[in-house]
Image 1 (cartoon, helix red, strand yellow):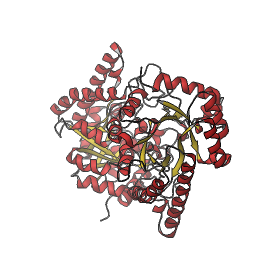
Image 2 (spheres, one colour; image 1 turned 90 degrees about the vertical axis):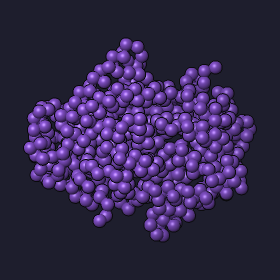
Image 3 (cartoon, chains in turn brown, purple; image 1 turned 180 degrees about the vertical axis):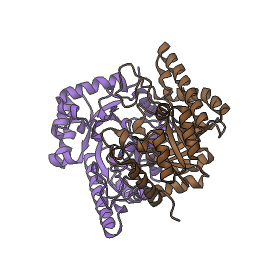
Image 4 (cartoon, one colour; image 1 turned 45 degrees about the horizontal axis):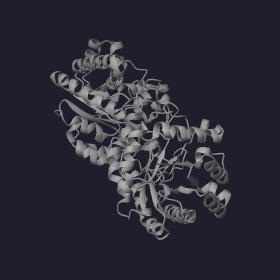
Length: 289
Length: 289
């Protein structure tokens, strides 16, 4: 299997620096973020990854499709804006030749990521989930025309209020099934799904729908900012090997991205982080030979 | 439906004070905790609730059955100790005439509630879940002989490392099915299950297996101590009515316990807390008339 550096793991690195880092450490793939690509410039980013001979294992991220659940004109405008932004994300993923566009679908309508629930936000979880399905019906054909695969990411239920109303792999998978496999797939991210009693059943059921396998550990206890609870593999509670073996058995042949949001990892020397990441990948993520 | 005060909502109150409070506020049921019952004395607690004419809607709690997953003698002893303690809890529930004994089954072997993962703890989640099933096979007949119903509680996945490897209602339900309905049921606790995409399907499937319906809100963001993220109904992200309606439609006729762990609620005047609880129960939990 193929190790890929998601550039948020080495947050201080620009696209150019992340590409250099991958080459220096012998990695063949990189996961990019739209914000950093915009800073580097899209054309320049394409040039950098091509000249380095890297695969772009994913582009993060599209999504945030639920604000259409707000009432009236506000909801209609928010839905239209979200679709526009996602079409741009799809275009960028196509230009980069990314293996997929990771979709973080958004939380309850009116709740912003990492912020408290404001007055006027919606508690209609079922409705928010319907908005996601409606948006997908608009975006999947657009992605298909551009050769981009949308990768629906189930997030840990702790993020349900503000980041993703997709909470399990099975739910993401069910949402993907109406579309061709090359248009809509799912992400298996160990941090988000390790606890799920249906995980192994749903990985097998997903099969070739698995568009991305992302690994990082789940720290316990989580830090106060729960977004930063993603740890280096081996530092948390996850037993990775059975999950990796199940993903392989399901037919996944893509890159394995390491995506860590963590204050200590971000404070460390990025080259040391990548070296540790390679060692841990071999030590605790890959199946025993 | 019938409102019950789980005594941890008014944490400062002893059993005697909680019983008085229920009577003063016109409640017909109380949920008790083993620790507070022990402080009051078991016989005295029985006398207090009987004289007040209250139902005991639940006794909290049995469980913590997973330490048997530790290797060797340590695991064997821990498993035996856990079974002994649970038999005592069952005896207490029988003496109190509690409608059920709530079971919080325990997290990864060797991880203590609210504490970091120590060296030597286990990452074998599947194994921990098997230990729970093994313990249940020992305890269910014992409970049945004493007329006590074990109520398996799925906890929010954030508590999977340290408090409960039962993470969804469906998983708890599947675990209960081999036993008679009067021996093993499940808890529907809104805080723990509100996000679950299979919630309504699993409530319907649970039917008369629902042994306890507990309500409190899910605060967003959670406080640093995630145990204290349980809020007064209406203060968080949960839309209660559809869940209450589903629980009723499934055939549940028992008490509805309000169980809130929350620093601000605990700091407030308990009588005001109970008054607010009654108002919110009518205002956001019960179905519209």
